[in-house]
Amino acid sequence: MAAKTKRMSYIIGISGGSGSGKTSFVKAISASFDKSAITLISQDDYYKPRTEQKKDKNGVLNFDLPKSIFQKQFVNDIKKLINGETVVREEYAFNNELAETKQLTFEPAPIIIVEGLFVFHNKKISELMDLKVLIQAKTSDKIIRRILRDQTERNYPLDDVLYRYKHHVMPAYEKYIGPYQNDVDVIINNNINFEKGLEVMKSFIKIKLQD
Image (cartoon, rainbow, N blue to C red):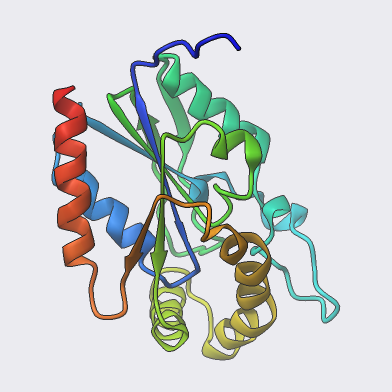
């Protein structure tokens, strides 16, 4: 078998159930290093528009499916970063008409963090990863975080948030995230906070940056 060509970037994949705190975790990592050292690319900016989202049996749009994402574009942009190319993309506002979107620019970096619900489920993305990290949290904590986020950031009413959690979020976790927990390299518990896990990851990344 031919040896793999050494890449300039080290790819860290981070996933977890909705409300597990993975987005806050990756932002905390990014904030701890210079922008030239780490690039964070998130699945959240690759959602399809409402007109292309699948409806459930009650006519409610389901954003918690792999098909809700422009998967091919996501994979291609990750590969561009690995190949040293800059990626430019419009920020996704999660259908919140009150949100102001901006143009996002992703630059190649020694450490590339790929974050999202389905990054382990997508084999083409998973195969690119050098390290896989799963953020875990109790269901009750995830529900509370989901409620707070969706009401403040996405302008969703409470009934809608709870319906989606029961009928979309939980089934998605059981099918597309949970089954991969035995395949990951690191599991970080975020029931109270992720500070200890964050310190471990920061130390690991510092070592990688020195290599």
